[in-house]
Length: 116
Length: 111
Image (tube, rainbow over all chains, first blue to last red; front, side, top):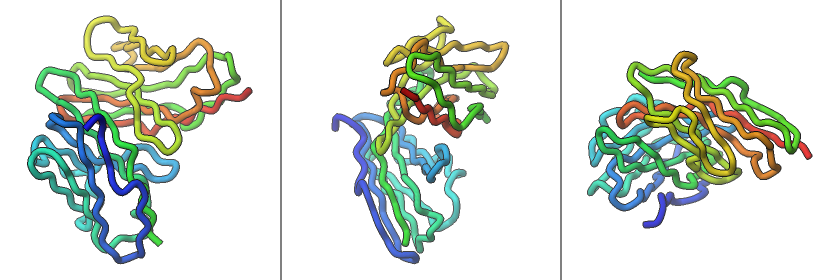
C-alpha cells in the first residue's frame, strides 16, 4: 500500500479480554517495528521483525504480549488478559532496511487502546 | 546499545521566535540520527536525518539540525516559529536495524 496501515484505529476493551492489533507495512519493507506510546510518555520500543523473524523481543513488557509476522508482511500484536495499564497508543513502523543503508522508519497512525 | 536524551519535555516559544530542541545521543558506532514530528492523533513523520557527509542537515518545514560528534548532540532548530509547528518532536538514533527514540519534546507556539 501507499503507507503503513494499522487497524483498528481505536479499540475499547474490558479488563481481562484479549486484543489483536494489526499492522500492514509498506509493500517491500523488510523490517517492521512495534512501539507503545502512553499518555505523556515517549515511544517505548516493543519488538521488531526482520522478515518473519524477531531478533529483539526485549521490549515486550510481559508474557501477556506477543507478536508475529507472516509472509514477511502483515504483523499482529496480541495482548492477552488486558490490564488498565495497557491503555496506550500502539504504533507500527516499517522500513526498507538494508545493511549499510540508513534505517528510515515510516509510521502508521496508530491504534488507540483503551482498557476499561 | 544506543540511547537518546532529549532535554526538556516541554518547550514554549512565541510565534516568530527561534526554536531550539535539544538532543544528545550515545552510540558505539557512527550513528544515524533522525528527528521525527508527531501532530495530534497522527503517527510520526520524518523531519530530517543525518547519515554521513555534511553535518548540517535541512529538513521539511524550515527545520534543520547539526550533528556535533564532539558534543554527541543533534539539536533541532528553526529560525522563526510558526503556529503550525506546535507538535511533539522525537529525536532518534539508529544502529543497523535497531532504532531508539528519545522521550519527546512537546513544542507549544504562543501567538
